Amino acid sequence: MTDQRQRPPRRGQGELEAQILSALRAAEGPATAGWVQERLGGDLAYTTVITILTRLLAKGAVTRERVGRSFVWTPASDEAGLAARRMRRVLDGERDREAVLASFVTSLEPNDERLLRELLAHSEAQRED
Amino acid sequence: MGVFVFLPLVLPLTAWPIARLAEQRLHPRTATRLLTGLAVVMAVCSTVCLGLLMVVGTAQLPGNPLPDGWSDPEVREAVPYDEIAGKLAIPALLAVLLVCGRTLWRHRRVRRRAHLALADLPGTEVAVLPDEVPYAYALPGGRRDRVVVTTALLSCLEPAERRALFAHERAHLAARHHRFLLAARLAARANPFLRPLCTAVSYTAERWADEEAARVVGSRRAVACAIGKAALVSRGTPVPTLAGLAAPGPVPRRVAALLGPAPVPRTWPSVFTSVGLAAWGAAAGTAVSALSSANSAVTMVLILHAATPL
Image (cartoon, rainbow over all chains, first blue to last red):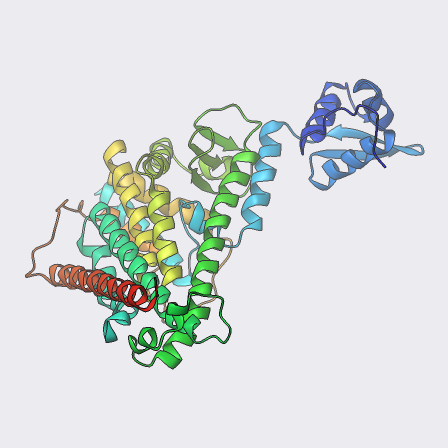
């Protein structure tokens, strides 16, 4: 079985999410999934829009509220906020990220904290002398 | 080749004293370069020797699909204790290749995914992320090197300390510290005896960036304060250790070093100091390691050549 129809090229991962998010941002106030579907030109199925919105909800990029029998959706954050969340996911997902990304500071052991406070207090006292 | 083929496997032990002393006694730039160089050469030699032992090991496998010369008795006799060493070398070499491959793959993946996370932001060098978790990273590669820092970390620093933070991360990027770190890490994977060198390199690379930041900002104190404050606000995950016995961790040592005098850049320490002795010891160990692996490799090639009927 082959599909004879010309299909549009497959969208890149995350491209749909970005489109739907920017459509939501263009809305004044909360918008329904139907509104988003219309706004994007209608080549997306309603269920696809719902799926992507739910995925964005799981990522914390949108919030939703129940109005009547359906939900209205609101974008939660801008590009920087979204990037911050994505970055956190990368960092939390990698056990040995310290090896790859040189971290500014590494975790402190209980003793280190006391030592560090002493060092800083000492240097502060020296400056005031 | 006799016992020489085993030497490079244990000679990394000669680098332990310098790994310990270089942190305090050498300029961090010298220490990073020296330790990474030692680690890489020793790791390559040790892997070559594992490969040679593996040849002997595979020769014993029944029905091996290798050239006839491979299983010639002469090949086996070239290595003492060929029965045990040869058999052990096969899984050891496979493990080394697997672990190194995985380390490389993970390294690429973290970098790619981190760049992808920032892809929608304007392409400036510094990416400030609104996040309540304080962290800062130097992210090399991608379309351009980037410094990633969160608002939570910036908000707890004073202007001079922020400059110190950015100078520190830029120093990581400018001097390509990630390459030293990756090389040392791969070396430690190839031979576990090289692990102290890997730990030392990750510390000296931070110290190198600290010193560079202190030079750029013009204040050692500002860098020390920036590190101290950043560490105190980001102490989220206490590592379970025996607090009473634990030696000071890397952060207090870095702060203490910055509050002290600047290190003197020297190319090679005098042999009459303990650090000089340790450095020369490690250099001698590396040289012996290189010579014995080269000797073993040549011997093995000659034997295989002689044993293969052409």
